[in-house]
Length: 303
Ligand code: GUN
Image 1 (tube, rainbow, N blue to C red):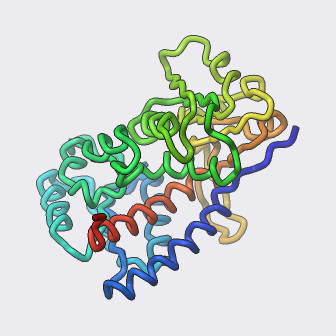
Image 2: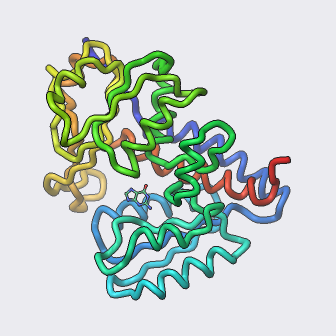
């Protein structure tokens, strides 16, 4: 078997074209584009790279894009004051604070300070609650899970009645993607199992999966023998395993590996996402979609 590779880079282009048309229409109706502020604290290389890509995509879509780069010594109070200022700013529809935060800052307090109606990451407890309720209650599905579900749908993989196994129980990926896929509706109606570091016999769970979503943060954790033939395997891992020279620019950059042994898995799986170029571009695309949706909710409230 040779897996069909689901490329986030290609699906991203389709969706960004759809979004660009919507941005133009919104600008005509309201005289301004969607506004996104990204707040980056410190110089964690992964965070710097993620934020750079988010900014690049926002600019490409013609969003108003505000960058706040703070030093790791920033006081929590100053960060909270900054968030509150953007909560009040009517030209800003989305506020994103890149995680992780330095140890002296309480992540919970920061996420709680963001207006839930500008929380385009979907991390505020109000938005977590909306996600759990499902259906029309959902405003901002968190970006990585939303990107995963969109890839599965656009690849034509049936989720209704499928056995989905999620590896990892983080608030950013594992818990929300499990919640989304068990809900009624598009990309849902699956039977979901969440496995984690406390699970006995990981391999036997993986082998049952029609759709295997791996967010473990362990390079090459998933071997070909753990994959049901024909399964759809979504690799969320972004592990920095070394450095490489970019053949296009000559610049040194991180060498990335996923959580799945890609080469071996490609002979067994029916569908497989690469790293890089799989889930990563989808996460950023969904952030743009949420920011645009936020402007619509705020300027054209549902009756
Ligand atoms: N850090 C890793 N992933 C994310 C994400 O999706 N959003 C934010 N804000 N921080 C992250």
